[in-house]
Image (tube, rainbow, N blue to C red):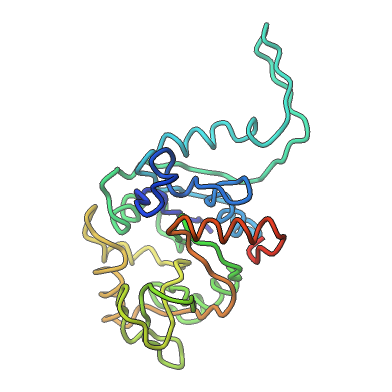
Length: 254
């Protein structure tokens, strides 16, 4: 199953890093957070990645173009240019990098990936959140209900969007960043049917607004409740928290 990663935002609340690199390239344990997210999917056998780029797209492109060299020791013959790699940390990933525009919003970026997605169910997430979510159980849940889109629902300590859920998992209302009541929020790991893209108007559309609100009104948005670890990286404090978990060998997503 194809995995679409949204990696084009400005990350203004992480300006300590994002003045130089895009937010998905901010490191955790010596690797970009984007790499950790991709590894989560790869652990469940999903290794066909489509990265929607925007701000500082060239940094992410350069990382993957030079991935072998950056993740292995090597010998280079400066006369011939011949390179021999040692201790290669290889991955079986296929990575498609697509520039979806500096000014596009999250919904617009997804819409621009349509020609690569084709007419098939796909996985979708942001480039700044880590979790120990079971991707295959998420997919299994999605297939069980036949709706357009499944959103992961998580319980963080505070401050994001709120989901109002019925016992069977159907979403009654979705509001981005209100005062929380029951504590369930958008965890950012989605399973999506291609027809959902018809609910996105264009580049200026926020995924979290009209498209998901429309899907909710149509009864086509379902929530997969994830009770385990989830943490986004919005601020330097978030990055330091994730870094500390990694360094202590306590990273639940590893």
